[in-house]
Amino acid sequence: MNSIITKIIHWKRFKKSLRVACQGISFAIKREENFRLMVVGAGLAIFLACYLPLNISERALIFLAIAGVLGMELINAQIEKVLNLVQPNKDERVKHCLLYTS
Image (cartoon, rainbow, N blue to C red; front, top):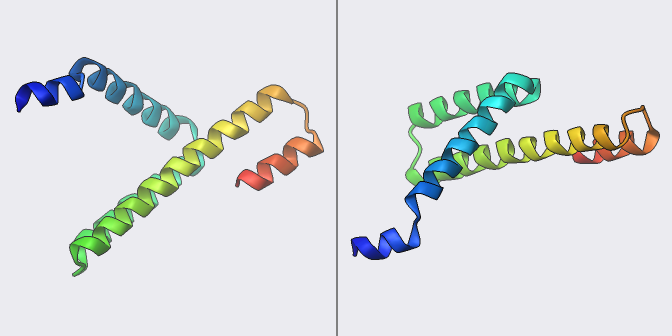
């Protein structure tokens, strides 16, 4: 059984991927104000989910919603950065794209 798991999961690659993901989240917390606010809100939601008498499926849905919101915020921040690189001047087209991703 252990050899099957070892063949499926390459631990060195997994640890490297996890390290890079943690670096990316750390970078976003340091540089993105909206992401910081959402992390604070997520922490409050997690605290309340653990404090209130919720069943396991309700807690799981809250955690999935938090992960989805934080993930979409990271994607949104990257879209904004790419659009600002492509068209650094204040262009109406970029402004409309940014409004659609918000």
